[in-house]
Image 1 (cartoon, rainbow, N blue to C red):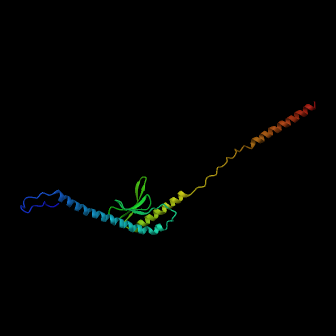
Image 2: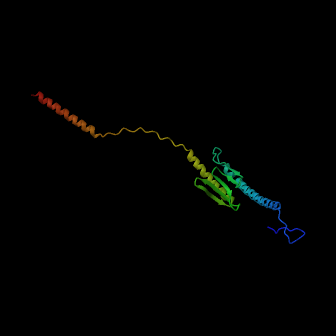
Length: 184
């Protein structure tokens, strides 16, 4: 900080610094820093609004019956441009780089990162297309498999032939035996 203030009578004796004066200086410094932080946050929100405007043509093409996407800017400690429930764009550490991230059950993954708005718009376009395809796959109703009646087991055709042959031979033997008995 600065040197302690001295009284006007004796230049060699330091005047005690009052706590109230120190608090006032600390509050002024904090207000200056807060002003810088607020300016940075406003700059982040402005850049996200520019990106949001650049995404308008993309979301104008999304059919209205598809309600996957809920785009909007949240202005919390970290301003974010939400694309849907799990994906959003925030500013990088340098406050000039866009970071397109997705929250997964395994953590947050960065889908794209660039200073250029067009690169992020392209990444969001790819993301929206993938999400729409996932929705289509989830919405497809597969036809129920028809219950098949089990076919009766096929019997071998040789056993009826063998049974018929034996029955025919026995009948001939019986007729021959009757003929022999009557001729006696």
